[in-house]
Image (tube, rainbow, N blue to C red; front, top):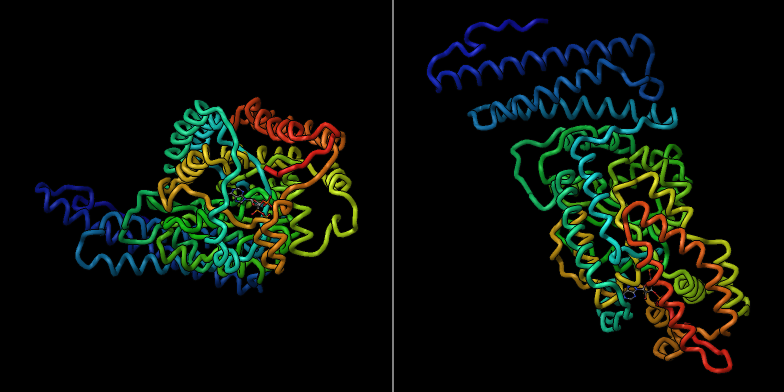
Length: 531
Ligand SMILES: Nc1ncnc2c1ncn2[C@@H]1O[C@H](COP(=O)(O)OS(=O)(=O)O)[C@@H](OP(=O)(O)O)[C@H]1O
Protein backbone atom coordinates (compact mmCIF):
# COMPACT_ATOMS: atom_id res chain seq x y z
CA UNK A 1 0.00 0.00 0.00
CA UNK A 2 1.34 3.41 -0.90
CA UNK A 3 0.31 6.66 0.68
CA UNK A 4 -0.31 9.44 -1.83
CA UNK A 5 0.82 12.85 -0.69
CA UNK A 6 -1.20 15.62 -2.25
CA UNK A 7 -0.92 19.33 -1.73
CA UNK A 8 -3.06 19.30 1.39
CA UNK A 9 -1.04 16.63 3.05
CA UNK A 10 2.23 18.16 2.05
CA UNK A 11 1.54 21.49 3.62
CA UNK A 12 0.20 23.44 0.67
CA UNK A 13 -2.11 25.51 2.90
CA UNK A 14 -1.10 29.09 3.43
CA UNK A 15 -2.56 30.14 6.79
CA UNK A 16 -1.06 28.67 10.00
CA UNK A 17 -4.45 27.47 11.41
CA UNK A 18 -5.29 25.90 8.15
CA UNK A 19 -1.87 24.26 8.02
CA UNK A 20 -2.37 22.86 11.52
CA UNK A 21 -5.86 21.62 10.74
CA UNK A 22 -4.86 19.92 7.53
CA UNK A 23 -1.69 18.48 9.04
CA UNK A 24 -3.70 17.07 11.92
CA UNK A 25 -6.28 15.54 9.59
CA UNK A 26 -3.57 14.08 7.37
CA UNK A 27 -1.71 12.62 10.32
CA UNK A 28 -4.93 11.08 11.56
CA UNK A 29 -5.73 9.38 8.26
CA UNK A 30 -2.14 8.33 7.80
CA UNK A 31 -2.23 6.65 11.19
CA UNK A 32 -5.51 4.92 10.40
CA UNK A 33 -3.92 3.63 7.18
CA UNK A 34 -1.01 2.28 9.20
CA UNK A 35 -3.39 0.56 11.61
CA UNK A 36 -5.27 -1.10 8.77
CA UNK A 37 -1.99 -2.27 7.26
CA UNK A 38 -0.80 -3.61 10.59
CA UNK A 39 -4.06 -5.41 11.26
CA UNK A 40 -4.02 -7.07 7.87
CA UNK A 41 -0.43 -8.12 8.52
CA UNK A 42 -1.49 -9.56 11.88
CA UNK A 43 -4.45 -11.43 10.37
CA UNK A 44 -2.29 -12.91 7.64
CA UNK A 45 0.29 -14.07 10.18
CA UNK A 46 -2.33 -15.72 12.30
CA UNK A 47 -3.77 -17.38 9.23
CA UNK A 48 -0.39 -18.63 8.16
CA UNK A 49 0.33 -19.96 11.64
CA UNK A 50 -2.91 -21.91 11.57
CA UNK A 51 -2.04 -23.39 8.18
CA UNK A 52 1.30 -24.56 9.54
CA UNK A 53 -0.23 -25.89 12.79
CA UNK A 54 2.01 -23.52 14.62
CA UNK A 55 0.94 -22.91 18.22
CA UNK A 56 2.36 -20.56 20.82
CA UNK A 57 4.88 -23.08 22.04
CA UNK A 58 6.34 -24.05 18.75
CA UNK A 59 6.32 -20.86 16.71
CA UNK A 60 9.36 -18.78 16.27
CA UNK A 61 8.94 -15.04 16.69
CA UNK A 62 6.85 -14.10 13.67
CA UNK A 63 8.44 -11.19 11.90
CA UNK A 64 5.16 -9.97 10.53
CA UNK A 65 3.76 -9.85 14.06
CA UNK A 66 6.75 -7.84 15.14
CA UNK A 67 6.18 -5.61 12.12
CA UNK A 68 2.52 -5.21 13.02
CA UNK A 69 3.41 -4.28 16.54
CA UNK A 70 5.98 -1.80 15.39
CA UNK A 71 3.52 -0.24 12.99
CA UNK A 72 0.92 0.03 15.69
CA UNK A 73 3.40 1.56 18.07
CA UNK A 74 4.40 3.99 15.37
CA UNK A 75 0.77 4.87 14.76
CA UNK A 76 0.10 5.26 18.46
CA UNK A 77 3.14 7.45 18.83
CA UNK A 78 2.20 9.46 15.78
CA UNK A 79 -1.34 10.04 16.95
CA UNK A 80 -0.15 10.86 20.42
CA UNK A 81 2.16 13.49 19.05
CA UNK A 82 -0.19 14.92 16.47
CA UNK A 83 -3.52 14.68 18.20
CA UNK A 84 -2.69 15.13 21.84
CA UNK A 85 -4.67 18.34 21.98
CA UNK A 86 -7.09 17.80 19.14
CA UNK A 87 -10.74 17.19 19.97
CA UNK A 88 -11.81 13.62 19.35
CA UNK A 89 -8.27 12.39 18.90
CA UNK A 90 -7.99 10.74 22.29
CA UNK A 91 -10.37 7.99 21.27
CA UNK A 92 -8.23 7.24 18.24
CA UNK A 93 -5.11 7.23 20.38
CA UNK A 94 -6.73 4.84 22.82
CA UNK A 95 -7.84 2.59 20.01
CA UNK A 96 -4.34 2.37 18.61
CA UNK A 97 -2.76 1.99 22.01
CA UNK A 98 -5.08 -0.88 22.95
CA UNK A 99 -4.39 -2.53 19.65
CA UNK A 100 -0.65 -2.17 20.09
CA UNK A 101 -0.80 -3.59 23.60
CA UNK A 102 -2.87 -6.50 22.49
CA UNK A 103 -0.68 -7.34 19.53
CA UNK A 104 2.40 -6.74 21.65
CA UNK A 105 1.19 -9.09 24.33
CA UNK A 106 0.45 -11.86 21.86
CA UNK A 107 3.76 -11.43 20.13
CA UNK A 108 5.74 -11.32 23.35
CA UNK A 109 3.96 -14.40 24.70
CA UNK A 110 5.01 -16.31 21.63
CA UNK A 111 8.58 -15.10 21.36
CA UNK A 112 9.13 -15.23 25.09
CA UNK A 113 8.42 -18.92 25.28
CA UNK A 114 10.49 -19.64 22.23
CA UNK A 115 13.51 -17.74 23.43
CA UNK A 116 13.39 -19.30 26.85
CA UNK A 117 13.62 -22.66 25.14
CA UNK A 118 16.33 -21.48 22.84
CA UNK A 119 18.73 -20.46 25.62
CA UNK A 120 20.86 -17.34 25.71
CA UNK A 121 19.19 -14.14 24.75
CA UNK A 122 20.73 -11.53 22.54
CA UNK A 123 22.02 -8.65 24.58
CA UNK A 124 20.03 -5.48 24.35
CA UNK A 125 22.13 -2.70 22.90
CA UNK A 126 22.58 0.14 25.33
CA UNK A 127 20.73 3.25 24.44
CA UNK A 128 22.63 6.45 23.83
CA UNK A 129 21.43 7.77 27.16
CA UNK A 130 22.41 4.59 28.95
CA UNK A 131 25.83 4.60 27.35
CA UNK A 132 26.47 8.17 28.29
CA UNK A 133 25.25 7.50 31.79
CA UNK A 134 27.72 4.64 32.04
CA UNK A 135 30.53 6.94 31.00
CA UNK A 136 29.62 9.60 33.50
CA UNK A 137 29.20 7.00 36.19
CA UNK A 138 32.67 5.67 35.66
CA UNK A 139 34.07 9.14 35.82
CA UNK A 140 32.02 10.00 38.85
CA UNK A 141 32.70 6.72 40.55
CA UNK A 142 36.40 7.47 40.56
CA UNK A 143 35.68 9.66 43.53
CA UNK A 144 33.29 7.30 45.26
CA UNK A 145 36.23 6.22 47.37
CA UNK A 146 35.30 6.42 51.01
CA UNK A 147 31.67 6.09 50.40
CA UNK A 148 32.13 2.66 48.90
CA UNK A 149 31.85 -0.33 51.21
CA UNK A 150 31.03 -4.00 51.56
CA UNK A 151 28.74 -6.59 52.76
CA UNK A 152 26.13 -9.30 52.64
CA UNK A 153 22.61 -10.39 53.16
CA UNK A 154 19.70 -10.42 55.47
CA UNK A 155 16.76 -12.61 56.09
CA UNK A 156 14.39 -10.97 58.44
CA UNK A 157 10.79 -10.98 57.36
CA UNK A 158 9.25 -7.62 56.71
CA UNK A 159 6.52 -7.70 59.32
CA UNK A 160 8.81 -8.75 62.09
CA UNK A 161 11.40 -6.24 60.98
CA UNK A 162 8.87 -3.46 61.03
CA UNK A 163 7.64 -4.35 64.49
CA UNK A 164 11.03 -4.28 66.07
CA UNK A 165 12.52 -1.49 64.03
CA UNK A 166 11.73 1.27 66.41
CA UNK A 167 13.10 -0.55 69.43
CA UNK A 168 16.37 -1.03 67.63
CA UNK A 169 16.78 2.52 66.47
CA UNK A 170 18.48 3.47 69.68
CA UNK A 171 21.58 1.39 69.08
CA UNK A 172 24.56 3.62 68.43
CA UNK A 173 26.10 3.15 65.03
CA UNK A 174 29.62 1.75 65.17
CA UNK A 175 32.19 4.49 64.78
CA UNK A 176 34.31 4.42 61.74
CA UNK A 177 36.73 6.91 60.47
CA UNK A 178 37.19 7.95 56.93
CA UNK A 179 38.81 10.56 54.86
CA UNK A 180 36.34 13.43 55.09
CA UNK A 181 37.69 15.23 52.03
CA UNK A 182 37.32 12.09 49.96
CA UNK A 183 33.77 11.70 51.14
CA UNK A 184 32.93 15.21 50.07
CA UNK A 185 34.55 14.63 46.69
CA UNK A 186 32.74 11.34 46.35
CA UNK A 187 29.49 12.97 47.24
CA UNK A 188 29.89 15.59 44.56
CA UNK A 189 30.93 12.99 42.05
CA UNK A 190 28.04 10.78 42.88
CA UNK A 191 25.82 13.76 42.24
CA UNK A 192 27.06 13.62 38.68
CA UNK A 193 26.29 9.92 38.67
CA UNK A 194 22.78 10.67 39.80
CA UNK A 195 22.26 13.13 37.00
CA UNK A 196 23.50 10.60 34.53
CA UNK A 197 21.12 8.09 36.02
CA UNK A 198 18.28 10.53 35.58
CA UNK A 199 18.87 10.59 31.87
CA UNK A 200 18.24 6.89 31.84
CA UNK A 201 15.60 6.50 34.47
CA UNK A 202 14.14 9.93 34.42
CA UNK A 203 13.57 9.51 38.13
CA UNK A 204 12.69 12.46 40.23
CA UNK A 205 11.16 14.38 37.33
CA UNK A 206 7.65 13.03 37.19
CA UNK A 207 5.76 13.85 34.07
CA UNK A 208 2.12 13.37 33.29
CA UNK A 209 1.92 12.16 29.72
CA UNK A 210 -1.52 11.84 28.25
CA UNK A 211 -0.90 8.38 26.84
CA UNK A 212 1.10 5.41 28.07
CA UNK A 213 4.60 5.10 26.67
CA UNK A 214 5.40 2.25 24.25
CA UNK A 215 7.44 0.72 27.09
CA UNK A 216 4.44 0.83 29.41
CA UNK A 217 2.17 -0.68 26.80
CA UNK A 218 4.55 -3.52 26.16
CA UNK A 219 4.92 -4.24 29.88
CA UNK A 220 1.19 -4.58 30.35
CA UNK A 221 0.44 -8.23 30.76
CA UNK A 222 4.09 -9.29 30.83
CA UNK A 223 4.26 -12.53 32.70
CA UNK A 224 7.68 -13.79 31.72
CA UNK A 225 11.19 -12.44 31.88
CA UNK A 226 11.74 -12.22 28.17
CA UNK A 227 8.70 -10.04 27.87
CA UNK A 228 10.39 -7.58 30.23
CA UNK A 229 13.53 -7.79 28.18
CA UNK A 230 11.85 -7.09 24.87
CA UNK A 231 9.87 -4.24 26.32
CA UNK A 232 13.09 -2.64 27.51
CA UNK A 233 13.99 -1.64 23.95
CA UNK A 234 10.95 0.62 23.69
CA UNK A 235 10.69 4.30 24.50
CA UNK A 236 9.81 5.57 27.96
CA UNK A 237 8.39 8.88 29.01
CA UNK A 238 10.69 11.08 31.07
CA UNK A 239 10.36 10.10 34.71
CA UNK A 240 9.64 6.45 34.01
CA UNK A 241 11.95 3.86 35.52
CA UNK A 242 12.97 0.62 33.96
CA UNK A 243 11.23 -2.37 35.50
CA UNK A 244 12.80 -3.63 37.71
CA UNK A 245 15.16 -0.74 38.30
CA UNK A 246 17.76 -2.00 40.75
CA UNK A 247 18.86 -4.99 42.82
CA UNK A 248 20.63 -5.03 46.17
CA UNK A 249 22.70 -8.17 45.83
CA UNK A 250 23.98 -8.98 49.31
CA UNK A 251 26.32 -10.27 50.85
CA UNK A 252 24.66 -11.58 53.98
CA UNK A 253 25.15 -9.62 57.19
CA UNK A 254 26.18 -6.39 55.48
CA UNK A 255 23.17 -4.31 56.55
CA UNK A 256 21.12 -5.12 53.47
CA UNK A 257 17.96 -5.42 55.56
CA UNK A 258 18.40 -1.91 56.93
CA UNK A 259 19.17 -0.62 53.45
CA UNK A 260 16.20 -2.33 51.87
CA UNK A 261 13.76 -1.02 54.46
CA UNK A 262 15.25 2.44 54.43
CA UNK A 263 14.81 2.67 50.66
CA UNK A 264 11.37 1.09 50.91
CA UNK A 265 10.17 4.10 52.85
CA UNK A 266 11.07 6.35 49.94
CA UNK A 267 7.99 7.52 48.02
CA UNK A 268 9.73 6.89 44.69
CA UNK A 269 10.67 3.30 45.53
CA UNK A 270 8.46 0.28 45.03
CA UNK A 271 9.96 -2.48 47.11
CA UNK A 272 9.44 -6.15 46.28
CA UNK A 273 6.69 -7.72 48.34
CA UNK A 274 9.28 -9.86 50.06
CA UNK A 275 12.82 -9.12 51.08
CA UNK A 276 15.18 -11.75 49.76
CA UNK A 277 12.93 -13.42 47.22
CA UNK A 278 16.06 -15.26 46.02
CA UNK A 279 14.24 -15.86 42.76
CA UNK A 280 17.25 -16.31 40.49
CA UNK A 281 18.89 -18.68 42.95
CA UNK A 282 15.98 -20.72 44.31
CA UNK A 283 13.65 -20.70 41.31
CA UNK A 284 16.14 -20.61 38.45
CA UNK A 285 19.26 -22.27 39.85
CA UNK A 286 21.20 -19.20 38.61
CA UNK A 287 20.29 -20.01 35.02
CA UNK A 288 17.92 -17.34 33.81
CA UNK A 289 16.71 -19.66 31.05
CA UNK A 290 15.61 -22.27 33.57
CA UNK A 291 13.00 -20.45 35.62
CA UNK A 292 9.63 -22.18 35.48
CA UNK A 293 6.91 -20.19 33.74
CA UNK A 294 4.60 -20.04 36.74
CA UNK A 295 7.52 -18.92 38.93
CA UNK A 296 8.35 -16.15 36.46
CA UNK A 297 4.78 -15.00 36.48
CA UNK A 298 4.66 -14.95 40.27
CA UNK A 299 7.96 -13.14 40.49
CA UNK A 300 6.96 -10.41 38.06
CA UNK A 301 3.45 -9.90 39.32
CA UNK A 302 3.49 -10.74 43.04
CA UNK A 303 7.10 -10.17 44.04
CA UNK A 304 8.11 -7.25 41.83
CA UNK A 305 4.52 -5.93 41.68
CA UNK A 306 4.33 -5.07 38.00
CA UNK A 307 0.68 -4.07 38.09
CA UNK A 308 1.33 -1.56 40.86
CA UNK A 309 4.37 -0.23 39.05
CA UNK A 310 2.24 0.33 35.93
CA UNK A 311 -0.60 1.85 37.90
CA UNK A 312 1.93 4.34 39.20
CA UNK A 313 3.02 5.12 35.63
CA UNK A 314 6.46 3.57 36.30
CA UNK A 315 7.33 6.61 38.38
CA UNK A 316 8.60 4.39 41.20
CA UNK A 317 11.87 2.54 41.18
CA UNK A 318 11.35 -1.18 41.74
CA UNK A 319 13.87 -2.95 43.94
CA UNK A 320 14.50 -6.43 45.20
CA UNK A 321 17.25 -7.52 47.58
CA UNK A 322 18.52 -11.09 47.65
CA UNK A 323 21.57 -12.12 49.59
CA UNK A 324 22.43 -15.23 47.57
CA UNK A 325 23.06 -13.13 44.50
CA UNK A 326 26.13 -11.32 45.77
CA UNK A 327 28.16 -14.27 46.84
CA UNK A 328 27.19 -16.19 43.71
CA UNK A 329 28.02 -13.42 41.31
CA UNK A 330 30.27 -15.77 39.32
CA UNK A 331 27.15 -17.83 38.57
CA UNK A 332 24.55 -15.12 38.19
CA UNK A 333 26.01 -11.81 37.06
CA UNK A 334 26.57 -12.61 33.38
CA UNK A 335 23.31 -14.48 32.73
CA UNK A 336 21.43 -11.79 34.58
CA UNK A 337 23.08 -9.14 32.45
CA UNK A 338 22.02 -10.94 29.28
CA UNK A 339 18.48 -10.86 30.54
CA UNK A 340 18.37 -7.45 32.24
CA UNK A 341 21.25 -5.34 31.01
CA UNK A 342 19.66 -2.15 32.33
CA UNK A 343 19.74 -3.12 36.01
CA UNK A 344 21.55 -1.05 38.59
CA UNK A 345 23.35 -3.13 41.17
CA UNK A 346 23.98 -2.14 44.77
CA UNK A 347 26.65 -4.10 46.63
CA UNK A 348 27.63 -3.74 50.28
CA UNK A 349 30.69 -5.42 51.79
CA UNK A 350 31.77 -5.66 55.41
CA UNK A 351 35.11 -6.40 57.00
CA UNK A 352 35.23 -10.17 56.46
CA UNK A 353 35.97 -11.40 60.00
CA UNK A 354 33.12 -9.33 61.43
CA UNK A 355 30.84 -10.56 58.73
CA UNK A 356 31.91 -14.13 59.44
CA UNK A 357 31.09 -13.76 63.14
CA UNK A 358 27.74 -12.16 62.39
CA UNK A 359 26.94 -15.03 60.06
CA UNK A 360 27.85 -17.70 62.63
CA UNK A 361 25.74 -15.95 65.26
CA UNK A 362 22.89 -15.67 62.80
CA UNK A 363 22.92 -19.41 62.10
CA UNK A 364 23.03 -20.16 65.80
CA UNK A 365 20.40 -17.67 66.95
CA UNK A 366 17.98 -17.88 64.10
CA UNK A 367 18.26 -21.45 62.93
CA UNK A 368 19.93 -23.27 65.85
CA UNK A 369 22.38 -24.56 63.28
CA UNK A 370 25.87 -23.96 61.97
CA UNK A 371 29.35 -24.56 63.20
CA UNK A 372 28.91 -23.03 66.66
CA UNK A 373 26.26 -25.59 67.62
CA UNK A 374 28.87 -28.33 67.35
CA UNK A 375 30.79 -26.94 70.33
CA UNK A 376 33.71 -25.80 68.19
CA UNK A 377 35.43 -22.53 69.01
CA UNK A 378 34.67 -19.27 67.23
CA UNK A 379 38.17 -19.31 65.78
CA UNK A 380 37.79 -22.82 64.40
CA UNK A 381 34.42 -22.02 62.83
CA UNK A 382 35.66 -18.77 61.35
CA UNK A 383 38.79 -20.31 59.93
CA UNK A 384 36.65 -22.85 58.17
CA UNK A 385 34.13 -20.42 56.73
CA UNK A 386 36.65 -17.75 55.75
CA UNK A 387 38.75 -20.30 53.88
CA UNK A 388 35.77 -21.18 51.74
CA UNK A 389 34.35 -17.73 51.16
CA UNK A 390 35.75 -14.61 49.63
CA UNK A 391 34.39 -11.49 48.05
CA UNK A 392 36.77 -11.05 45.13
CA UNK A 393 35.68 -13.76 42.71
CA UNK A 394 31.92 -13.04 42.73
CA UNK A 395 32.58 -9.30 42.96
CA UNK A 396 34.73 -9.43 39.85
CA UNK A 397 31.93 -11.15 37.97
CA UNK A 398 29.49 -8.38 38.95
CA UNK A 399 31.97 -5.76 37.85
CA UNK A 400 32.58 -7.42 34.52
CA UNK A 401 28.90 -7.97 33.82
CA UNK A 402 27.69 -4.53 34.95
CA UNK A 403 30.57 -2.11 34.61
CA UNK A 404 29.40 1.42 35.27
CA UNK A 405 26.14 0.23 36.82
CA UNK A 406 27.33 -0.70 40.30
CA UNK A 407 27.12 1.31 43.49
CA UNK A 408 29.61 -0.10 45.96
CA UNK A 409 29.16 0.46 49.67
CA UNK A 410 31.66 -0.24 52.39
CA UNK A 411 29.56 -1.34 55.35
CA UNK A 412 31.84 0.45 57.78
CA UNK A 413 30.98 3.74 56.07
CA UNK A 414 27.30 2.95 55.70
CA UNK A 415 26.98 2.27 59.41
CA UNK A 416 29.22 5.08 60.61
CA UNK A 417 27.64 8.16 62.11
CA UNK A 418 30.12 10.26 60.17
CA UNK A 419 29.55 8.89 56.68
CA UNK A 420 26.09 7.39 56.70
CA UNK A 421 24.36 10.52 55.41
CA UNK A 422 26.78 10.85 52.50
CA UNK A 423 26.50 7.20 51.54
CA UNK A 424 22.70 7.23 51.58
CA UNK A 425 22.50 10.58 49.85
CA UNK A 426 24.92 9.45 47.15
CA UNK A 427 23.10 6.18 46.62
CA UNK A 428 19.70 7.80 46.20
CA UNK A 429 21.07 10.44 43.88
CA UNK A 430 22.67 7.73 41.80
CA UNK A 431 19.38 5.86 41.66
CA UNK A 432 17.69 9.00 40.37
CA UNK A 433 15.38 9.48 43.36
CA UNK A 434 15.16 12.42 45.75
CA UNK A 435 18.22 11.99 47.98
CA UNK A 436 16.65 13.81 50.91
CA UNK A 437 13.77 11.36 51.30
CA UNK A 438 12.65 9.72 53.48
CA UNK A 439 15.64 11.01 55.51
CA UNK A 440 19.27 10.02 55.64
CA UNK A 441 19.16 7.90 58.76
CA UNK A 442 19.61 4.23 57.88
CA UNK A 443 18.05 2.73 60.98
CA UNK A 444 19.22 -0.61 62.23
CA UNK A 445 17.65 -3.99 61.66
CA UNK A 446 18.46 -7.61 61.98
CA UNK A 447 20.83 -7.31 64.92
CA UNK A 448 21.94 -10.18 67.10
CA UNK A 449 20.04 -8.58 69.95
CA UNK A 450 16.87 -8.73 67.88
CA UNK A 451 17.21 -12.42 67.15
CA UNK A 452 18.05 -13.34 70.73
CA UNK A 453 15.01 -11.42 71.95
CA UNK A 454 12.86 -13.21 69.45
CA UNK A 455 14.05 -16.50 70.89
CA UNK A 456 13.18 -15.29 74.37
CA UNK A 457 16.83 -15.00 75.45
CA UNK A 458 16.29 -11.54 76.86
CA UNK A 459 19.09 -11.50 79.41
CA UNK A 460 21.64 -12.71 76.87
CA UNK A 461 20.38 -10.22 74.30
CA UNK A 462 21.09 -7.34 76.64
CA UNK A 463 24.35 -8.63 78.03
CA UNK A 464 27.75 -7.19 77.16
CA UNK A 465 28.84 -10.59 75.91
CA UNK A 466 26.14 -10.86 73.25
CA UNK A 467 28.40 -9.34 70.68
CA UNK A 468 31.88 -9.89 72.06
CA UNK A 469 33.83 -12.87 70.86
CA UNK A 470 36.92 -14.06 72.76
CA UNK A 471 39.92 -15.24 70.78
CA UNK A 472 43.68 -15.53 71.20
CA UNK A 473 45.91 -12.96 69.55
CA UNK A 474 47.65 -15.59 67.42
CA UNK A 475 44.32 -16.91 66.24
CA UNK A 476 43.06 -13.48 65.25
CA UNK A 477 46.31 -12.75 63.44
CA UNK A 478 45.89 -15.98 61.51
CA UNK A 479 42.41 -14.97 60.48
CA UNK A 480 43.63 -11.58 59.32
CA UNK A 481 46.32 -13.27 57.23
CA UNK A 482 43.63 -15.47 55.79
CA UNK A 483 41.34 -12.65 54.66
CA UNK A 484 43.85 -9.96 53.75
CA UNK A 485 44.69 -11.20 50.21
CA UNK A 486 41.03 -11.36 49.23
CA UNK A 487 40.41 -7.95 50.82
CA UNK A 488 43.31 -6.54 48.82
CA UNK A 489 41.87 -7.98 45.61
CA UNK A 490 38.54 -6.34 46.38
CA UNK A 491 40.26 -3.02 47.01
CA UNK A 492 42.19 -3.34 43.75
CA UNK A 493 39.07 -4.22 41.79
CA UNK A 494 37.12 -1.37 43.33
CA UNK A 495 39.94 1.00 42.37
CA UNK A 496 40.27 -0.46 38.88
CA UNK A 497 36.58 0.06 38.18
CA UNK A 498 36.66 3.52 39.68
CA UNK A 499 34.34 2.65 42.56
CA UNK A 500 36.62 3.35 45.49
CA UNK A 501 40.08 4.41 46.45
CA UNK A 502 41.72 1.04 47.05
CA UNK A 503 44.06 2.40 49.72
CA UNK A 504 41.26 3.96 51.70
CA UNK A 505 39.24 0.79 51.38
CA UNK A 506 42.06 -1.29 52.84
CA UNK A 507 42.78 1.29 55.49
CA UNK A 508 39.22 1.00 56.79
CA UNK A 509 39.49 -2.74 57.19
CA UNK A 510 43.06 -2.67 58.49
CA UNK A 511 41.79 -0.28 61.16
CA UNK A 512 39.24 -2.88 62.28
CA UNK A 513 41.92 -5.53 62.53
CA UNK A 514 44.37 -3.31 64.33
CA UNK A 515 41.62 -2.15 66.69
CA UNK A 516 41.00 -5.72 67.81
CA UNK A 517 44.71 -6.46 68.24
CA UNK A 518 45.14 -3.28 70.30
CA UNK A 519 42.49 -4.53 72.70
CA UNK A 520 44.29 -7.83 73.41
CA UNK A 521 45.71 -8.07 76.93
CA UNK A 522 49.28 -8.93 77.87
CA UNK A 523 48.49 -12.63 77.92
CA UNK A 524 47.29 -12.46 74.33
CA UNK A 525 43.59 -12.73 75.17
CA UNK A 526 41.53 -10.64 72.77
CA UNK A 527 37.88 -9.87 72.35
CA UNK A 528 36.50 -9.29 68.89
CA UNK A 529 33.65 -6.80 68.60
CA UNK A 530 32.38 -7.12 65.05
CA UNK A 531 32.33 -3.86 63.10
N1 LIG B 1 22.57 1.03 60.84
C1 LIG B 1 23.33 0.02 61.23
N2 LIG B 1 24.41 0.23 62.00
C2 LIG B 1 25.19 -0.79 62.41
N3 LIG B 1 24.98 -2.07 62.08
C3 LIG B 1 23.91 -2.34 61.32
C4 LIG B 1 23.04 -1.33 60.86
N4 LIG B 1 22.07 -1.93 60.14
C5 LIG B 1 22.34 -3.24 60.15
N5 LIG B 1 23.43 -3.49 60.84
C6 LIG B 1 24.05 -4.80 61.10
O1 LIG B 1 24.03 -5.56 59.91
C7 LIG B 1 23.88 -6.95 60.23
C8 LIG B 1 22.67 -7.49 59.55
O2 LIG B 1 22.93 -7.47 58.19
P1 LIG B 1 21.87 -7.96 57.16
O3 LIG B 1 20.58 -7.29 57.38
O4 LIG B 1 22.45 -7.80 55.81
O5 LIG B 1 21.76 -9.48 57.54
S1 LIG B 1 21.04 -10.65 56.72
O6 LIG B 1 22.04 -11.24 55.86
O7 LIG B 1 19.95 -10.10 55.98
O8 LIG B 1 20.57 -11.62 57.73
C9 LIG B 1 23.75 -7.01 61.73
O9 LIG B 1 25.04 -7.22 62.23
P2 LIG B 1 25.32 -8.06 63.58
O10 LIG B 1 24.53 -7.37 64.65
O11 LIG B 1 26.80 -7.98 63.76
O12 LIG B 1 24.84 -9.44 63.33
C10 LIG B 1 23.24 -5.64 62.07
O13 LIG B 1 23.51 -5.27 63.39
